[in-house]
Image 1 (cartoon, rainbow, N blue to C red):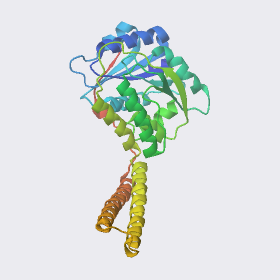
Image 2 (cartoon, one colour; image 1 turned 45 degrees about the vertical axis):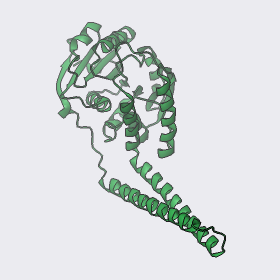
Image 3 (cartoon, rainbow, N blue to C red; image 1 turned 90 degrees about the vertical axis):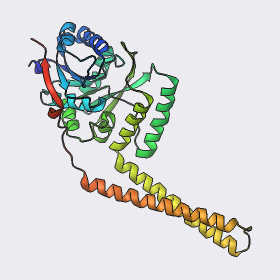
Image 4 (cartoon, helix red, strand yellow; image 1 turned 180 degrees about the vertical axis):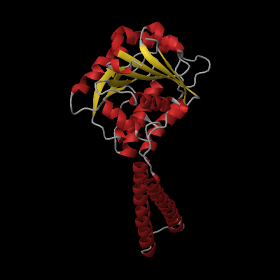
Length: 316
């Protein structure tokens, strides 16, 4: 394999998107020539399986990882990244990108440039402009704010990123990587630099991600920070429970002073007691779940080999 002879390693998942991925490979060959090596992960495609011919026809060196089944976009990236980590040389840089054309190959040099600095491990693409529907844009804005409230961390980037070899080795050792790649980068504590880039239109076909899948993808990012989310929910529940105790006390005082109207005291007290029991139980459950997660967490590398059915390399 001529892996180490190339400066840039591209890791991209492909699922039933033969036309778009073929165009991407041609754009990469045009932009970088022999400097690039492509690790294309065929995520269990059935109707349009990816073949090594797509890479060879584009004139780009690389390898196709044929997965035994469809594992999903994020795990496919994790498998490709784990495969690349086994062969990386210190002088190489890795770029994660989608194969549909929305991550523009022409912007890769700008994405790679900050990696030359010693204090940068990962460079992530933050979108300056999006070719998306109004529904998607509105949901994304709401999601970013909800994510920050629940985790205390901002998230404004996706899978398009550039990494140093040491950063790749660190990420593939994280059990969070197959769940959500961007959230795993946040959790990794790697030194990250943001690079504003435009997002391009799809080369061909339609996106496989519907609204339900998009919402699920967003909530998977919260799963990476489940402990933080549970603690914040527990604190919020405890505050509400404390407020219900204060409210109940005020209701009792007003009743004793004769300021309550008939039926008002029993209604208000009942509401506060019910609120206290519910939020108190929720706070207790979240704290218990946090303890269970801490005691049962085990850091394991992504076992990518069991998912790969075949590795096909381009001919020299």
